[in-house]
Length: 115
Length: 112
Image (cartoon, rainbow over all chains, first blue to last red):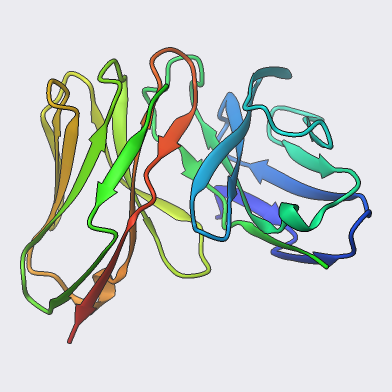
């Protein structure tokens, strides 16, 4: 059973389009995260989400917005895609995001290429 | 603001060798520190998590140590195997309720 899953695995799209990446966790965790790994393989936090409340937004452009229909899902919506958005996006979850004493579990990543 | 640095950036060793990967962090007020493994084109797999009150954690051939006072952690891999080839990432949270801050990783190649 996959603990944290993401769809799609690959996403190729044109500049200016709007796209979404879905994430689901079946671990019963309270907190979910989105990370971006750029071309230099540097992994940086974008958002964390706890009980439908955004905890941290690491100054990402407002073209990016997390949407959580329920506790098990945190989807990432991206409007007006730009070339610089090309990266691998990872979803993760942890039991308790207010005090990060627990392991974070990562999804397999979504490779986004903007042409 | 937490900064995490990993040295070396890449490492190549013959099979069977013991090796050490290094991680340093600037803010020692951390709740824990995690080591992850990332295979090419894949996601991250958590290897070890060390709580701030602990000095080390062991899992099989892996041993991770934590020295908060010096802002350092090491990942020791015993009797390395070709299957250990991957990028190893160290991550620590800022103090408080922020998510993980990652180092840039050490790319390990174990040659058969």
